[in-house]
Length: 204
Figure 1 (cartoon, rainbow, N blue to C red):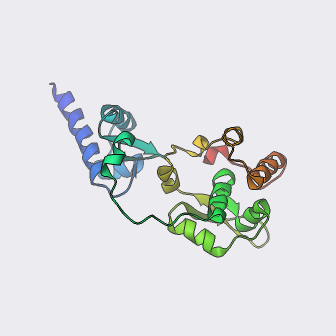
Figure 2 (spheres, helix red, strand yellow):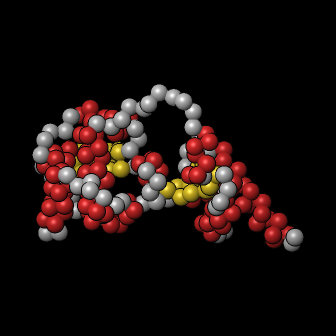
C-alpha cells in the first residue's frame, strides 16, 4: 500500500470513528470541524456508505447529516420488550403533516387548513419530539411565529429530504386521503397564485 493510500485509509477510519462516537448525526461541516479540512470528504462518506451496505449496520444520510443505523432487516433482533410509546393524536398527525407539506407555516395557517383550532399542547408535543421547530416570524401584521420540520423528523421517518414525502397521488392510491388531506390539496392549487403556504423547493 502506498503512502497516499495509507493516508486516505487513515482519513476514512477517522470519519468512521467520529460518526461512531457521536451521539447525534453529523453534517459535513461538523465533520470538518472535528477532522479538519479533509479533501473529498463527501466522496469519502459516499464510499464509506457503500462499504457498509449489506452489513449489520449501515451508514446513511438524512437531511444532510450522516449516522450509523441498524440495517432494517436486522432491527427485529435488537427489539426489547418495553412500554408502548405514546402515540400521536389525530390532531398531532394532521398538524405534523400540514407543517411537513407547507412549511414554513404559522399556527393560523395550520388552523385554516384543518378548519379547527390547534391546541398549543399539540405543537408542544411535536417540538418535544424534536420533529418541528420555530422557524422565525412571518413578515405580516402581528408577525406570527412560523414552524418547520427538523432533521430529526427526516431521520425518524427515513427521509433524505422533504422531496421524499409521498405526493397527493401516492396518498390517494394508498387510500390515505381524508377531508383534511383534500383541503390541503385544494389549498395547494390556490397557493400557486398567492398563498404564503407555498412550498419553497429550495428549502426542501
